[in-house]
Length: 387
Image (cartoon, rainbow, N blue to C red; front, top):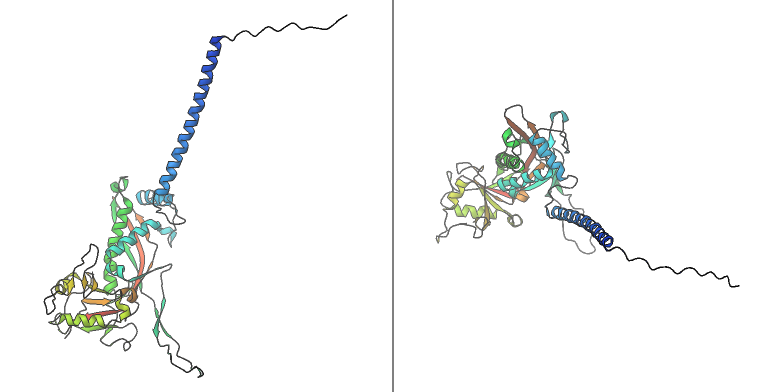
């Protein structure tokens, strides 16, 4: 007997409801649109981050190594504007209780740049940065002998070189500009540029006088303060400068061009490369009137924008602190000041905010130690008004 079980044939599935299928398609489309919107949001966020990174990379780096832009913003907005010390991240002063703070590096660099533009002697002299108040330098003054010998002859001992120590006198240079509280409260007021400009002008004015005729007591020693002699190089003591007489006891005389040529050629050839004439505007006015026998002016204006005026082929620097033409004065200096005059300064400028002394003005007491002295007395020559 055949017991094989034959299942009942399955019936075909009923066709799906068209309305339900359409609702399912709409739901899937809504889900896809939500996911696409999320992706678009992520892409926009990534693009914004990339744009911010690009702008940051294109922005000039003002902060130095170890000092961020936030540090400077905290100094300017927190301390200079409002007097708050909570945001200060700079090096504190020597006496913390006095409230002195080091100016951020980029502000200090702004001051340095403006000083070079305003202070004429600083722009041509040798400037060194020091980490302390004092600075010392050894200068070789010659004396090491040499000689000729045959191949088999003995080598006699030569003299040892002679050195002299240079220790530029230093002083505390200060400026005390003031700003009203309304200026500080104005967000559009460029406090950094204003403060740098004010300090630079005050420092440049004081420096310009000290580098020329400073006494050396709590300030730099000017190159005109150094002793001067008519003796030639090699015959004067170290540190004594040489001068040439004008030939007239009251002025430049009738042969001023001869005196100027002598002045140029008393300077050694090695120093003449990079030498400058230094005088004030009143002396320059007299120099510009000088002519050669054939009627040509000794003074030559710069032919290109930015090129200095020249006298006998050498640039002329105007320093208003140079003396006028008068009996016994030194109105003209000629020399390589980068070889001849040394400026030593401690790079950190200190600023103390004082909102109490002169209300409603806020004073910013800025200080900086600067020193200066003649480095090589053979590198600078002077013209003296004498018969």
